[in-house]
Length: 264
Length: 214
Image (cartoon, rainbow over all chains, first blue to last red; front, top):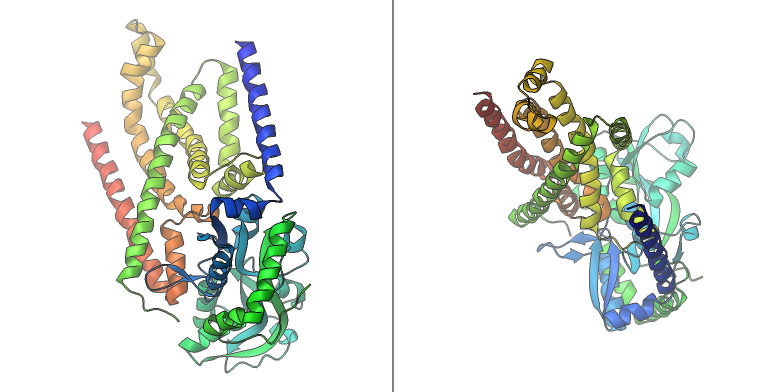
């Protein structure tokens, strides 16, 4: 009886070790895996319009989906979009649930410790948006005000980092909730991207962009150590940029075209 | 770019509701089985078994379900175990439900008056028999309202599973609200759908209680 139990424990430990060894081996050749599988699994948040959203027939659409389609086409594989909440973007990648993440993923040095970034596909500008009647010109003006932001986004990071002491930061789960807080007067201002600002302006003209907080380049997230896939994606981004495909997607979904995107 | 809130969206949310109900069913079945085991451990005369069960209940009741879900899904993957979301959810919810049901049912069994147990003993029934014929039938009646109350809570807790990439009712509502920018209408629809599932369950509990009382 005791022996059986010990054998089970040893067996289970061996299984865990063997499978983690298998996983470690797998990291680094995701590119081969994708081609052999005939399918690329891309993590995209479908609740972040206009980057990731759904169309009239509830199919994934938006800027990130458009880029994912271009990549899948050039790889010659099928595209599988995995919907994810923004907090799950990096865990999904590092635990191998998805091959890459194209999910309005702002580039920060903190995140770059956990994952690798490709060259940028879009540079957003993070700005303060507030009722037209209010008079905010700098971050100092936000002291004592309630400022809304979407949790786990670079908007959150930058606001948390730069906000002057005394600013009341309120974090919401998605852009719809953040925008709604502004519409309903629950917050005095929000920090969001250009695309979100356009979305707000498409609905109402009561709110204005006040001032820009920072530029935020967005890239594609790749698992650490996946250099083959990383290099292929950078090559692809260069080709898509030269052919104008990235700019076309920016124009279609974000309403603005970057003059240039950072390469590193 | 933004869409009108339409029947297509409601249909999409009803699909999400299907998953919510399915997840709740998995959690109920898994949690009931594990909960029954825990209950038996808790009322065991062996103090080691009883303490072990109590320790488990303390730990699980003291940690948020969200964290349990995270550990079951991402944590297992870090250990190199391949987990699909459904497996992780089934495991996390069963473990979570077991801790609460184990305690609810233990309380119900212990609240059956001691005289019943003594009477059964005096009639010469063994511990197992008196449990089966005398104690448990009375305990079920006491346990019904809190059990159903917990089930209803469990159904609503399935909204947490969106964190591990499950597109259930709350996640579909999030997606629709972001596509239409009509959060109020969308979340009211979601609330109504949850109600349509939970309310009959509460009614059923009421009826069950009345039937068991006679």
